Image 1 (tube, one colour):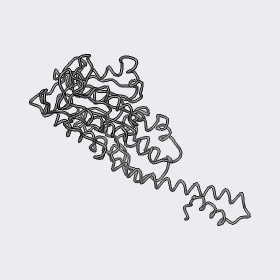
Image 2 (cartoon, rainbow, N blue to C red):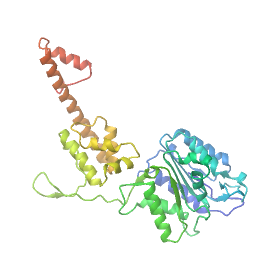
Image 3 (tube, helix red, strand yellow):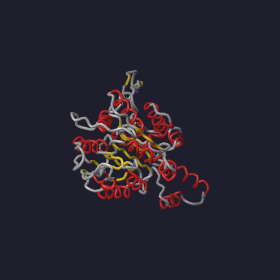
Length: 374
């Protein structure tokens, strides 16, 4: 998170200082990515390009999944029309006094993360999109799976920082979406959901329209939960009588069979309104479409809790209930293993009739297979 609000040779942008703290809280908070303090670096009022690049380099070295870089401040053009980002001492048409966008882009690209997101809230930020569709030597960025650039203004337009508002126009709408959500939107808001809502709101106010450029499925990366999401009520018959329950998610606590567990997993997806492909996409690629299908139609317990956990969270099940699901999974998984062990031991006893059952049982214990009687 990078922001420059005070300048020696350019107009001050006091709203930028407000942008940083509010956006950092929205992105790293419980409704966002739930990041630790170490995972969200803020560079406020940088005095040199090196200071910015050092921070981006450190983040790019640590991030292995997704790297997001945000800049707010003045965007300036060099005599050749190249975008550079202003710092405290920047001067118009002197790119050597600021940070060339291409240097920032290269630093992001050289990192370890599989997905890259760049958000620019500055004048002429649409120029950055050219780095994804310009000459052949710039096409590498576009060819990388997971690259996404969101710009607050077209390549030939200035961004807006209303003097009577706490945030810049673009970032203000971004914070509003993350904090308040989208009525009628999905449980999880991805980059494209957020971009469309920002653009819709800015258009309604007659303000500069943001631009974006993404590669393949980058726009499906979830930025956070939708605070405005309302789960559709599902009327189910109660176990005693016919009193309807409006609880939208099945309760995993009373589940006692593998069939009941799998059936309830399938019901979770039905309640979420997501298709198998939707779940795969909104999980950020952590679950394949085929895995979703197998997870909800298998005749045995899922072997890995991590898969079940991601599936439930992606569908929108609250964290506290996900923990209840984990307890149910552990219990049923142990029971399934014990039942399987009993079956195998009985089969081996029949095949080795001369050996006592206790000897065969000891062999299975050494192999880590335990029965219900142990």
